[in-house]
Image (cartoon, rainbow, N blue to C red; front, side, top):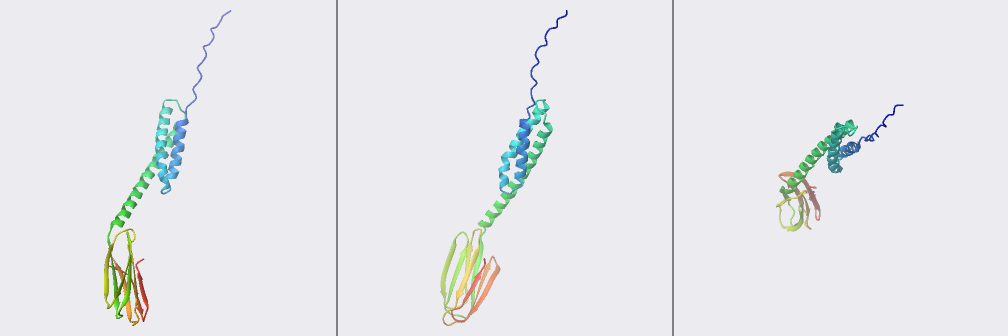
Length: 199
């Protein structure tokens, strides 16, 4: 009777480790979807970068036979890279917009307030809106009257209110911003008001 030596126990077959590739795909997909949303897309930066890292590790493991989801890892790498490109585009657009806003805020504007007419002793109130809001009142005995103000800030606006006196007459107000006439108005009679706004 022939005796056979018992077969040595076989080592257990290692299960494929697909977690990193799957994680890379999920992070990349979520990052890609978020990257399309302005401002919220900033959150996509870490997601797509982690997606690239995990997907690349997943591809390496699949190439060594320790994972079976190479296709999913490649897809994760692709969506992560696309998400990263979109994030870079958004960052460029936002930086450009911020630079333009800062340049506009630093730019100096010239506002010219003018009052003409035949009225005497008129009350003139002019307000300038910029980095600071200023309001000035003057009583003008005879017209014409002109005032030039320089201002900076995101808002570069002005308002001019002219009120005739007891003797009446006609007044015309005008506001010019950086050489461009913005508004003009006329009032006639005693205690009448002409208002010009560049807003």
